Image 1 (cartoon, rainbow, N blue to C red):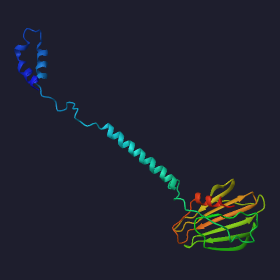
Image 2: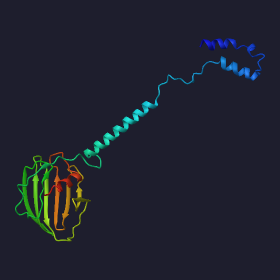
Image 3: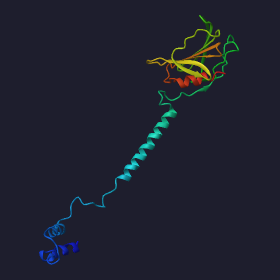
Length: 217
């Protein structure tokens, strides 16, 4: 700053005499020397904003990935709730009338406390129905039926696969969500699972119902 002050003192009109300066050149030099520093001059004291911005973007991206993969594992995406816990079920109450050609449930979304059986009949033939119930009135209805090959069966709902077998899934809309899964094995065995949550807060998604169906052994 001292050198600049001294230079301003030296830059008088006489300084330019005899040195070939034009009036325009002299005016420009005097203007630059005597002018005050601009308030818009670049300052190195300003803190850089690019690095913090990139750090924020990186953190936001990591957080988004964490939420997405965590939600995927919990089943929060794809329209499903978190998968229900499954308990091993030993079918001590398998009805004697149920033929050896039928498989039976080995995993249930609750601990079974009560089992009832009944038989019926429809246009396709005899039906065996087994009902499993938990302590909060959660209920699973299992239906078993032998059918003729190429029977005229309409499977309404979402098309699904249980193992290699063709099936359909349906769920009701309302206060108590009812989930239903039907599938046919080998063109001659028809299975159906219906789940009612009862007094529990557990509902089963399509994925849960397929998991339970694939536990049939």
